[in-house]
Length: 429
Ligand code: S3P
Image (cartoon, rainbow, N blue to C red; front, side):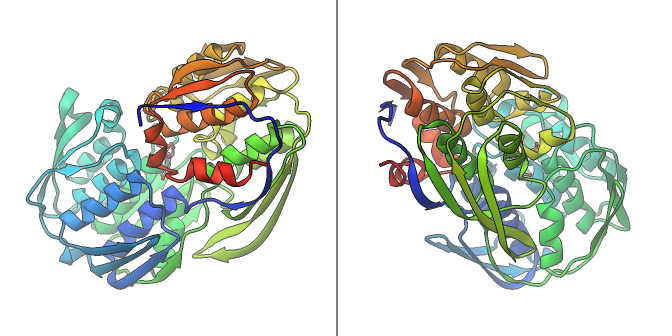
């Protein structure tokens, strides 16, 4: 579909919903199952295009992976069971596949060539290639070895102590995965905590990893065992409905079975600080990840300043938070979020352009944006910029806009949330 016309909503949002499985956890479930010994079964796997790129990459290395709906079965043969692919690996749009896979490939005694789509080809890979080279891998690519297409010749790696130059779970995870295949103990010193699904899942598969203050340590050569696991709902997908319900008059929406890992729940903290009526009930832990139910009721909101340590905990939610801020009273300032420039689109530019086109008052800064509240949003003709989270932000904006919005390139929403419009429909009325 090249364009979709979105109409303003003249009713409230109400009801219960379950969002699809977590994208970060789905990727890692394939990676760890493929490295483990035995057959793993993953349920509630995210059927998004990004996670299919991870499946295809391991199939290309000879791993038997079968998918039936949201259940995936992976026949792991251990690290020694992986084979050299005969063709280049297509990473599609997926930054997570690229950065995490680079870590695995660096430790395998084969040659790989990797490429991605136009968006991924622009994104920086040196942040993970540099430490992997230091560990002993040969990695080359466009623009002095920093961008896709890239080639990797992996092999026996030595451990390092790595101080990531950026706050990125993908970079941390790439180095930890390489550390699992390296000689000795690899350390990653993380000044600001980022999502820790790699650490949690490694332990669920029987591996050992420790964290003392800022230093994460992993010993190389550990063998992992297959498990059966269930993926919790993705809080980053739930965020679109949490914001929609906070904005649309008289709404009340409950999202069940949502992952509540504390490294991911910044959206709940931001909503609370802005004055939202939000209730979170933590219910259980699945595969080392807390899960629960979130209920939000529409209520007036106020602008806040968002910066510092919370940024990695809301990095994927900042576009939808920016939309929320246009409706709050007062100003919202987002700082320390330069990483937004290196996402599926430059999300400082794409969010600011989009909100401007809708009639909001927003100003881009080097590492964030300043958003004036109390804006009425108009109809507009907009493009998703090929970025799933911008596409969904526009869809939520259309609910409260004064006129129709024509959204060009809506198909990218399937990267992380193929059933987004069907799920939205379930709570309309
Ligand atoms: C992810 C980490 C984040 C996030 C991405 C998924 C992960 O990227 O934006 O959607 O699964 O590790 P960075 O770690 O590069 O910020």
